[in-house]
Length: 569
Ligand code: COA
Image 1 (spheres, helix red, strand yellow):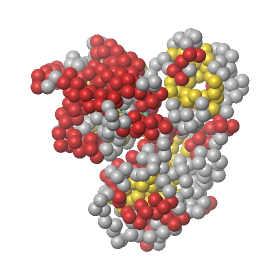
Image 2 (tube, helix red, strand yellow):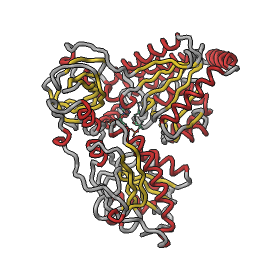
Image 3 (cartoon, protein in one colour):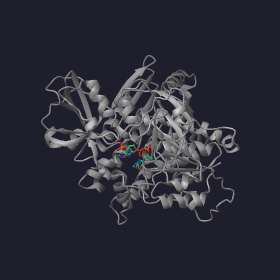
Image 4 (tube, protein in one colour):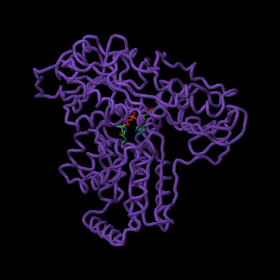
């Protein structure tokens, strides 16, 4: 089928649908929802069999849905309507929730139901539920809906109006406002505070105040401590500890000023002067190391918010990797974070800095040092296990390990060019061609497309993909890592690894790759062409898109011929 993905942005759900539906054999094109006339033009050019709208902020124009089958993905139970579906589900402490595919009609989210998938709710942020449960459910529901299209056209199948859906429990819910989200520090217990912040994370955050200054709160977890409710009672790294009526919560990130303020920053950095006098206390570290299998296998996780790695985080991670390298283990598993393995250098920190070029430079050096620490670990085997998505430099960081395993459903974006033609570093010029060959490496970098973990395996970019949920993946990782450590061929594998590294080093030293990459990066950061700085600004500010990139909108490519077989409703 010809499927047009009509979407506000190319977000994680849209990327997953794009990659999966293409793998299913459909011809998929993308159009950003910019204006009704632009959508109408895209539909006329592509003549889609079906329009799928994974993420919209406005209604689909009537001129489109009346003539073309348009399926909307709504992150709510059958009958649920409104723009804050997941926010309300978290706030109302729902134990189960759903994602529903419905047909566009005049009233938003009120059309007949084509498919739905239920999932258990987890104590997690809205963004995490969206990236995981909602995305997996949406993919299954969209596939089911597409399976009905032919029958529907022949009149052999009909979608079900929400009112006729058995046990439909959804209802209209208005946009959640800051007044609904407000934390009453004198009343709300820890669980309520956590719930309120998680329902607003990653957007728009909860409007509140710290040290008397207005801000929006994000990135929270339970902590330990006592104090006047609402008071800041400790700090650890970038996070601040605030007392609640029955304990304390960590606030990891804030936006100072209004919710339009683009700089979501570590709380202790955003309030650097005020936080200077706050006592350091023990908190939950983003970096965690543990050993299993009688000390044979070490596991190092680094759960940085949004997978973004600033200079300090990179330096702490490098130290942790080097320390883990000194342990008498045989295998080191690098786990990244739960939702993101890594998304490379920290663009928000860079954007907020006095000199963005200088901090970019510092950040990429620190990132390269992390890669180097992995590449130089020749006395044990290393595995990168991608529990969540990886983007840009974060992908190449994973390739520094001897083996790369990903959870099914993970999406990789192994390219830099979308960020203002950034050349990229992280030793990618060494690591990528080594795995996939020079021609394919060029293709991956130029195409700038999201890759499913399965496709990354078949292209040789990574080694394995398994486990369609996190716990299955982690169990299987543990089995495979144990097998690796106790493999009778372990010593031979290690010798091969050392020999290969020495051979590669003799042909071209790692420092040479790094220097060459950094020469390009220096030009990106400090040169006359401001593309990287402009792209980064728009990325951080979340500037609405004004056109769809040509590599996604194939119907706008030169040479595209509109088919004359368009199906209409
Ligand atoms: N630095 C800072 N923040 C980052 C980030 C980075 N490198 N990468 C992602 N984020 C943030 C986003 O701003 C967003 O923030 P929010 O919580 O305010 O919504 C959040 O992480 C999720 O990112 P989003 O873009 O919504 O995720 P996605 O899964 O839809 O897309 C990517 C994934 C990787 C394609 C996209 O995030 C991206 O292009 N990131 C930049 C990668 C990059 O160029 N890094 C620098 C070069 S190494």
